[in-house]
Image (cartoon, rainbow, N blue to C red; front, side):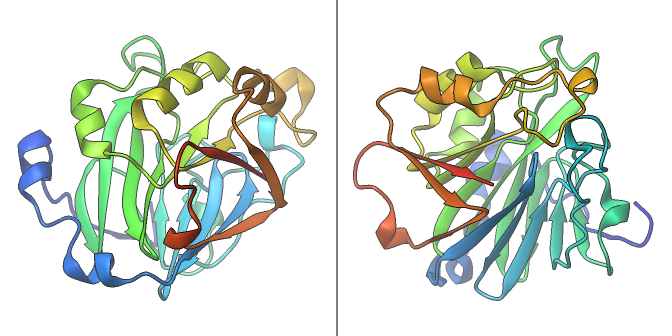
Length: 251
């Protein structure tokens, strides 16, 4: 966590989250859209309304061995845990602000909420806690689930609401959703845009990665439209589907 400006915990719990001004007038008024660029695995760069947000920078090893570390500049870095495949903040240049704990925050007028979840199917006893992140950027409500590994409970559902964009792990392994668990989470949250992450790719060292490929998830979601726009995707609120979901596979 060296060289980072830590933003202090600003309250937690269902009551404070509902009663807070997390979605302030400034963030809701901004509606210029957002561009989402995949950097591999769980790492994305979100750009819009003068703010750049980097999620889950990683070290190049195991499932990410063949990927360059996401050494990109950002105003804000969100990490879901301090594991090296999703919390390698030392690879990020400059001195961005860093969030890594559950709570309510405000950065450059944007309300950001970290929601605690288990990072494994054993009550967090193996890999600890995961932080899912929710914020509004460019007029879109975004949720990055990080390494979510357990079903979304009632309190978490209330905190998350119904996202416009949901970034969700689908590759399985011991510390994140497998395709079946990801599908169940989608049925709870009903997002407009689904971006799968944390799945097996050609960048992995096969003997050091326990994930399955994205096709297993897509097969399970048969009937849901799938798009492959490349490494990045630009969205406006007005461009979202009126009904149902669309899966956008980035990379």
